[in-house]
Image 1 (tube, rainbow, N blue to C red):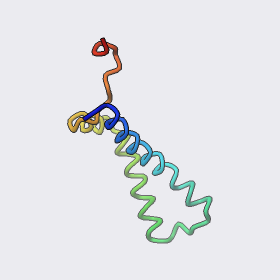
Image 2 (cartoon, helix red, strand yellow):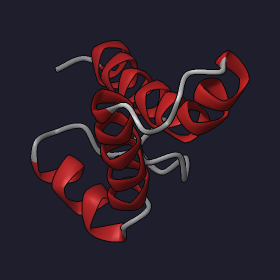
Image 3 (cartoon, rainbow, N blue to C red):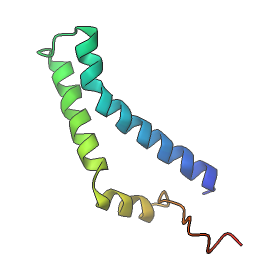
Length: 78
């Protein structure tokens, strides 16, 4: 997998997490009642996703499937 594809996939994952973090504010600003079942479910998923993405184990999983961070130490960039 090329670096460009790897970075694109990671960006999509990060954008999803950012949206998940912003979802409660979006719901509050739109005036949608939070008692609706789909809103409650979406907020639960958003909270869970943001919590999972904060774990160091997630980075290890991404490394295993080839989506880990590129080594920016400069050792391989000669």
